[in-house]
Length: 509
Ligand SMILES: [Zn+2]
Image 1 (cartoon, rainbow, N blue to C red):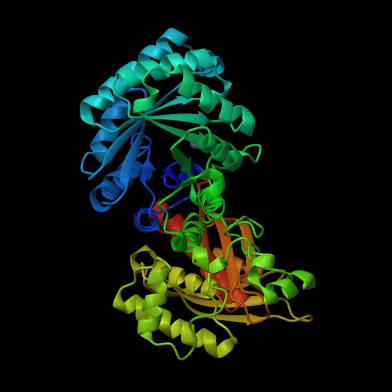
Image 2: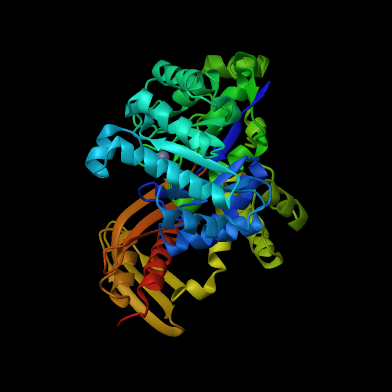
């Protein structure tokens, strides 16, 4: 069976998803989780893009020892220098450099000729190779390029020592059979290709990123670039979990497999979704909430007789447990183990808080599901970052009803000083929002409010995601979970405002 390498670019392409923002600590935790998931390569970022990116790639290189750590660089000297600076301390460093090969990119974007593009590619790989033995090269927009020119560039960079050639469908334009054909023709027409790894990087603009990646595997690709939950630029990248589970479920069809630790798939998906603020669509393959839910009576009947009647994979395989595992009688040890299985690493204080919250919740609702536990653990780890909290909620009181103007009374600490606030609105959440806005800088405004019940039923946890803009228009996403909708809303708003204030500097009054 052929081994397919999983090149995860959640921290680079995934981080480029519109609306995604991960903080440094979250990137580090996700990188750790990706290592646990068993990916072969982590593309940790684009070091030249920002100091934050550089710092993340550097720290991931210094702490994650299992997978190869790749840094992305354009075919420009300063990019490659910076990428090397970031990954040089990795146990297995890689520089990933790229240059467009399509005429539309070369002429319109770069104002250059094919000859220039070829030279830039060669020079970039030569420089990268002088630093690092492991060099990956991508001809950007390969699927809209003249194949002959792509072959020519690939051949030239192999001569300079590139070790992986990645064929990107940058704009998500290719169709599966056509993309498979392109990979086959690369293998037929490029001299020296047998000595390097062939990779693909597909985008999902037409919903074909996974199909195209699988077709590439059938035609000889041995590395797939993908992201957790399929997040990424525009419509996203090929989804890691869908590719891995296709290969797993249809082993004999592909005669290929990965080293992914399947049980970590669901916890990784949850973590990525919590950290990026991009929730997974309910009917998403493999990791969506409905992926293993059966509604039709005839299906349920069949499942009771034999699960294989309507299930091609079982949820346990990807680390998704259907039954609840923790309740009010669970101790710290059980909680610790379950949380570790989910990819969380908590210190003693956080563990105590999570255990207490689970017990509290178990008193209020019948069952505590994995989703609840993840939500609590994520919430607690956030809450501990006291230093980021300029505004702390002490007490919240609400007056509401069909004959009362909804009014919120808040007692807060702002930079350690007690402040009372009062506000009215069309409903209690709106009242909380106006009370808050009356005591924080007027420049902070609520852009988006999103409420969802995590586990269903009237006793479910409420998950509120808000987007708060600061004076300069920069939008910050924050999430909070509580069994009470108003509390979840207030906490999310305060978190969002704290994030906006942390970036803005002082609290103006
Ligand atoms: Zn991409």
